[in-house]
Length: 519
Image (cartoon, rainbow, N blue to C red; front, side, top):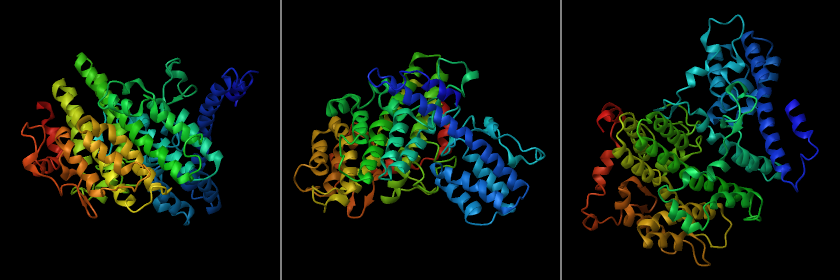
């Protein structure tokens, strides 16, 4: 309250001419986010005490109804479970330990810590009733064990998740809140370098998707020049997203369409580009020598921005593939649709991504920077396979739609196609032209050459990627390998034959960990 009063006490705080109003809004947003998180602490504490003391169901209901709805912006499975046991049914004390585990798993999403909640007096002997923040300092992301504390970086997916919820409504006030989350951040904290750690909680800044979209880390990365040349603007994604928020673009379409445009632009043009920046950062630190710590931290950040916090710690990520919001989740969703799932139940693309993450970590630890460069390039290419599958998915759905339609699938297809066109163009102008002619509206029929032609466009660049068509798979009548001609492939050794690359995808993660020291 005092911080907000101080912000607004300046007579020029809301002066738009001087630009002070923009800074005021950002400061108020940051303070309000912290204030909202702090208000959750006593509510959760009261709910825990009410359950521990097995108080009247009325008291449990009161606190549960204040706490559980707030978890809608967190992991969906946690929200569903707590809704079922605390709101839909009478509290069952035999489920206390499971309830506490799920609650504690949601603290980070709510912007609070184990220390904030503390230990309930008189129950110190039951370790399920309290947690330690140190236990989460080296997070496990879908099976990847980070050695740096990248919890906050991973929580950037919560911003996307929260934005999607707000943008699902036509209400403009909700859309304004979604825009503020994009511009100023909400869930991914970062330390303010202007203050000591003692003041960290009071002067917390938030990492924002807007800041990722404009980060200098993107410069000089793989595909950066091609994307900038195609869009004619190094900040194309950020301008485009803000234009959609402000209705300067697509202002007459539905909330569903605008939400899809923003969400997919963030995933492709913002998150993927920033991941490439972190990969470059890790490689540069490795090449400078004696900086393995910085390189290792950057590599863990790569994993955080690929996987995110919503996937959980289990190998392969969340059981419900709809829970995630980042590239890992996209890979799992497309893996199911294209029948490319491994024996552990998640996408073979993500299995390969995990192998590269573990391999790169080992190469950094042993200063093997030459092989790390190859790993970063391979990982960069592998992360594109789900986007390629997505373009094929929308080629299938859009082939019967008129180009003038406002169907959300047309916009989805265009966003992913515009992302891939400059990347394809780096290796084959013909492949890029196929995407342009079939997926981008040009006052002619959509997907005029058919969805198989869209899938075939990848074959001309498969050698350059070093990833063959079997990774893409089949969906309905489209088979990514239908027109694969092995006799036409290069003999340079740049790529691996389909059957061989398929076997490589199944390489055990255990073997990667075991032998990374000699990579």
